[in-house]
Image (cartoon, rainbow, N blue to C red; front, top):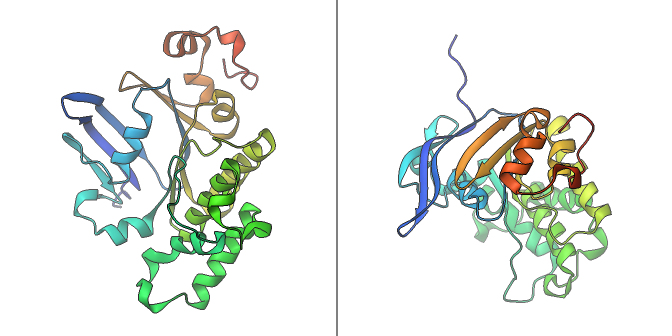
Length: 255
């Protein structure tokens, strides 16, 4: 029986800007239906790795595969139908109501000149309801708080209805209640819908509590990959993050 290839993988990828190497010789295999967090100190290469995994950056060496094919050989529309990305928060340069922003998530599924179909409208409505921003749907996104905008961009990714969801600091700018709600939503999307979830996080406690697999980056290298109880031990927290592990509140057994 032929083995199903990973839904997303990086093989010996080295990524950089100009003469500077950001990620060095990285290997990562993600199977369909996994839920994993990438953690590490500032400048470790987390966001750069995500950009390579989503096809935004071309590695200097090595290759990223999407569903078994080199991602560079996959049409951009097909990539967008397969990977939904929630980037670091960005500003919109013009007025746009929330529901229209969320509708941008449907662009990979239908040429924009055709307009929204009933299935697209249903997907937009479902995404808005699932994130809990129904009261904001006719507001101008530029008038929203940073936390509210973050929820809008998560809704855009949900409307995209891709089997892979990639998030770069999804809880940034959110208060603690909304942080927990977003984490619970990611668990639900993964467990109920089968969505593969890959998230960059700064909060080690959230990574340990909500993600069964954690990848640790340090100085551009993957230094650990496994369950949070294996990789977020006291010695690694001290070595990688340079802090007293006692100051990091992790679930019992994670350190």
